[in-house]
Image (cartoon, rainbow, N blue to C red):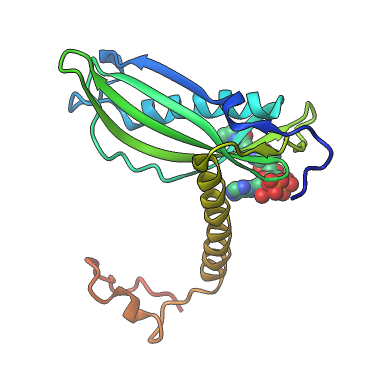
Length: 192
Ligand SMILES: CC(C)(COP(=O)(O)OP(=O)(O)OC[C@H]1O[C@@H](n2cnc3c(N)ncnc32)[C@H](O)[C@@H]1OP(=O)(O)O)[C@@H](O)C(=O)NCCC(=O)NCCS
C-alpha cells in the first residue's frame, strides 16, 4: 500500500448528506423532477464530500452509473448520501446514494446510486495528491475494491472506444454491426 507520507483519513470523516425539498420550479412538463436538478444536487454533494477528504478544491471529471430508476415527485424530500469510495493519487471516487421520501405516506424510494470521479487541484489548477483512505468497515473495503475494478474497466473501455473511433470504416466487414438495429442507411450516406 502506497501512502506517500500523507496522513490517511477515514471514510467517515468526509461522509456528507444533503436533504432538499423538491419544489414546483424543479419539475418538468410531466410534473416530475428534472433529471438535471438531481444531477446538480449530486454534483454539489460530491464536491462537498471530495473537498472535505482532499482538503482542497475539487473538480468533477466523470460520472458513472446515472440511471434514474424511479421518478421523483414535487413535495418529496430528496436525500443524497455521499462517501469517498476510492482514492487514486489526485482523484477520488465519491459514491452517492439518492433517495426520495414522501413524508405524508412515510414512503422512501431509492432513485439511484452514482459514482462521481473528482480531481483535487491547487490554486494553479494543477492536480494535487489526496490523502489515502482508512477502510474501517466491510462496506468501506467492498466499495474501494469495486471502485478500483470499475476504474480499470473504464480505462479499458475508453481505450477501446478511442481506437474504434479512429479506425471505424463502414464497409462489408462492419455493416453486419447494424443487423437487427432500428435504422436504415440512406443512399449516399457512405462516403468514398
Ligand atoms: C481534471 C483535470 C485537472 C485532469 O487534468 P490532467 O492533466 O488530465 O491530469 P492527470 O492526467 O494528471 O490526471 C489527474 C487525475 O485525473 C484522472 N482522470 C483524468 N481524466 C479522467 C477521466 N476521464 N476519468 C476519470 N479519471 C480521470 C487521472 O486518472 C488522474 O487520477 P490519479 O492521479 O488518481 O491517478 C483536467 O482534465 C480538468 O481540469 N478537467 C476539467 C474539469 C472541470 O472543470 N470540471 C467541471 C465540470 S465542467
